[in-house]
Amino acid sequence: MDRLQAMEIFLCVADAKSFAKAAAILDISPASVTKAVQSLEDYLAVRLLQRTTRRLSLTPEGEAISEDCRRILNDVADLASGDGDRVLRGRLRVDMPASLAKSVLIPELSHFIDAHPGLELVLGVDDKSIDLVEAGVDCAIRVGLNSDSSLVAQTIGALQRVSCAAPAYLARHGNPATLQDLAGHAVIRYFPKGGWRDVSEEFVADGRPIDVKLPSAVAVNDVDTYLACGLQGLGIIRIGRYLAQAHLDSGALVEILPHWVTPPTPISAIYPARRHLSPKVRAFIAWATGVFSAHPWLHPAPVREGSGAYRPYKSA
Image (cartoon, rainbow, N blue to C red; front, side, top):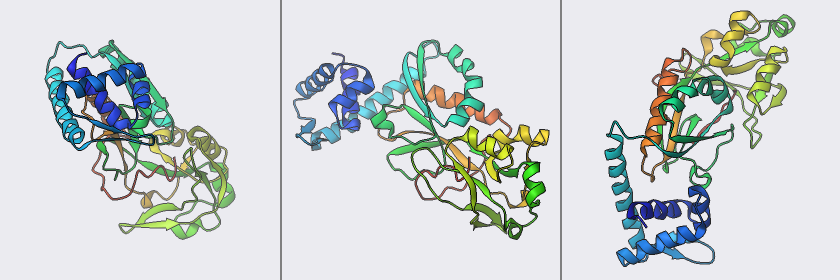
C-alpha cells in the first residue's frame, strides 16, 4: 500500500480513536484500515496504537510519528496545491447552518462546482453543531466564537443582526424608542436544534453589553419558522440582516432600536487542528470567503475575539 495513503489512514484512526469510525469516514473496509496501520507499523518497526477492549490511543512512539506524518502530508499538500494544473479530486465533506446554506452559499455553489468538477461535495446542512472528526467532516462553517483548542477557526465573514417586528405587532404594542420601552413587549425565541436554552436579548448601550430579559410569545428551532413568526406579528425577532433586509425594504418588517445594535458575530471556517489542511479544503474556504466578502451584510469585519465555546445564535 502507498506510504502516504497509509499515513492518511493512520491519522484518521488516531483522530477518530476507532478503526471502525475511520473506515466509515474514509469509505473503505475495516480490513483495509487494519492492513494499512499494520503495514505502517511493520515498516517503522514500532507499535503506533495501543488497543484495549475499551479504548484506542496512541503509544508514545505513535504520538511522535503522528506529528511527523502530519508535517509530511501537509508539505505534500502544499506542494500539490502550488501546481496550477492539478485537478482537485475526491470527496469533500462540509457542514454549515441551514440559513446560510440556502440563502447565501447554495445560490453561488455552481461556480465552485464548475471550477472543481473532480470533487464530490457532500453538504451537511443543520444548525446543530457536530463533532467534526467523529462525523468525518473536512471543514464546517460556524457562527460564533471558538475556544476549542482542537479546532482551527478562520474568519470568513461576519453576521450582522437586526431587531425588528411586523407593523401589526408594533401597532398593538407600540414602537420602542429606548430599552426601557421594551417593558410589555414579547420576543420570538430561537433555540438551536439539539437543546432548549432560555436566553436574554443582548443590546449595547454606551459601549457596554446589556442583557434584557423579555418574555417569549413562542419559541422555535428553525430559522425559516422564526422569520415567519415575526412576519405574522407574533413578537419581536432578532435575525441576521441578510435574511431580514428584503422584508425591511418592503415594509413587512420594521427595524426597532437601531442605536442599540450588537457588534457583528464572526462567521468562521473551522477544521481539526491536528489534521493537515488539504488543497480541496483550502479551495472551499477561499471560495466561501469570496462569497461572504461580496455580500453586503456578511462581509468580514473586525470582530472582538473572546473566550467561550461556539455560541450559537441568541437569535437567528
